[in-house]
Length: 299
Length: 221
Image 1 (spheres, rainbow over the protein chains, first blue to last red):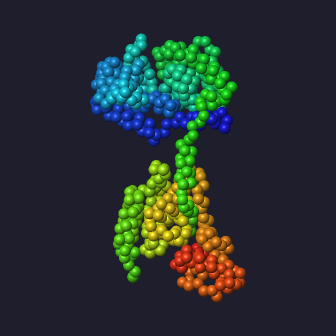
Image 2: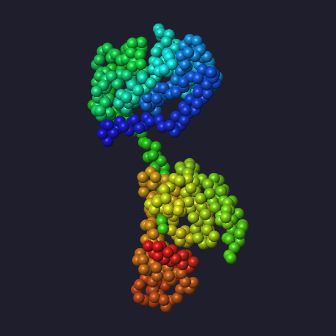
Image 3: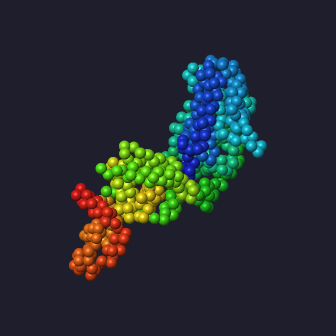
């Protein structure tokens, strides 16, 4: 198995199928959230849909969050006159069924009940916002923390930007690297950084793409500038990237050394045995335990 | 007209129903159109864990237990193909019937479910995963029958197998017959002891069925 085949297998192990237990649980929560929002703001007809990595196709099993966006029409005040009111009202409505934690522009849903002083995290972020106009494309989000009170964004621009980049496999593997090494880089910024560093290299092999990204980060003193494609001038991402840049740069250098010294498994580990292999093993053992074997025939 | 087996012996059916539904709570035994059916979900259990499940239907023949039940997978999971040992009409062939009819517990549907049916479905689960049939498989058609009967009789040559079955299909074995082994000797001077030993295992009824089955398949070819 060469490096690219190995990396494809790593990616497969990170797939989260629609019929998986985790995804079914997420979908059931999404249904619940949608019901709470629609019942809570019945007259406002918000647009509710998946955002984030689920919509972009960059989700990884090891660290998945489901973004459910909930955007209200620009001229609707049923959910609140201001963005902050919308955010707070959404919070109130969701609090009926969930323990809600504030994030910068979203609401994190956790279990209401505490077990051993902690709450089950449902991996769901609800993102309330308001469309800027009738076209229902650009949207304003409330910013609960930070200098700005609102942020202009566009979900479809983000989704298309990532989907059309042609480097989603590399993005997923770099997200996994970011998670496993606890580098703390926001996944949205990692996506933008990866796309920027792989500009013109989408047709090279996956292993080479990852090396190019790490080469582009290692030994670079100051963080590379990335732009939010939906809001190039109004969403300054430099602070978030600069904050983790030293760790990122150091991890890129050590990862490249590690690949050179010990191969790709030193980065992503051995491939876990696929489910079908385990199933075959159990079935074989069951067959070996048969006391009186019989052979099928056909007339 | 001969009375249906389960009407002639209702307690036999009642016991079968109890036994099947006790061993397989998701299978149901019922009568429909003068036929006894056993249908429902069949679990493949190994070490207390259900490793797979199939929807099945068994149809017990009018001369049960002299003939074996017909088995069908009804969930649409197993393709109706020869290499899956399922005929175009959906009937599966988990075993050459006479092999089963020689078993001392051949009148027990639970044994049939625990044996050939379970083995067949377990094999199918492995085949689905790209594995070979775990216990091997018989060739299709008469070759498969000759292979099975040959193992039963300790012979390989088709004509010898035929002659053995012919002898065994008669109620009494006589020493002046030509020996089925093809030696040209009288049976009493050759394989009489072997044939008498086989008689203990292969009733004339089963040998007749085997001959009839070969004849039917050879005629079809």
